[in-house]
Amino acid sequence: MTDRLPNRDLTVPELRAVVRGLASAPERWRRHVRHDPTRRHYEELVRDAHLSVWLINWTDAQDTGFHDHDISAGAVAVVQGRVVEERLRVGAQPGRAEFGPGQAFDFAAEQIHRVVHVGTEPAVTLHAYSPPLWRMGAYLVEPDGALRRFSVSYAEELRPLDEPLAA
Image (cartoon, rainbow, N blue to C red; front, side, top):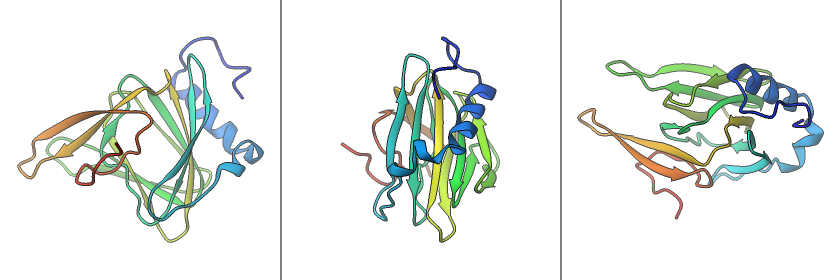
C-alpha cells in the first residue's frame, strides 16, 4: 500500500485514494476488527514519515467529540456499518453527513469535526492522515457558545469532552 506512494506528504485526493484502496483489500486489515461496547477499538496499520493509517471499530453511538487534526489532513472510508460526520459551524448547527459501506469523506487539517457511530450494526472505518498524526485538538462547546480547545496526543481515544480523556 505505501510502496507506491510519493516521498512527500499526501494531498487530500491522494489520502482518499489510500483509504479506498485499503478498503478494497480486507486481507490487510480484517484481523484488527474487534468491537467493544465500552470504547472504540483502534489499530495503527501504517506509520511512516508522510502517512499514518488507522482502523477504527465503532459500536453503540460511540462519538469522537469535536476535534481537529492539528497539521494533518485526512480521509476516511467506511467498510462496515454507518457513521455520521458533523462539521462545526459558527452561528449555525453543525453540517451533517451520513456515510455507509463503500463511501468515503475527507477533511483539511484545520477543519473541526466529529464522527459518531449510528445504527445498530457495528461500524469499521479506515483513516489516513498526512503528515502522520501526532497531536489533535479536542473541543468543548460551552453552554454560552464559547469554544475551548485542548491539545491531545494522537494515541488518546477521542471522546466528547464532557467525558474524561484517557490518561
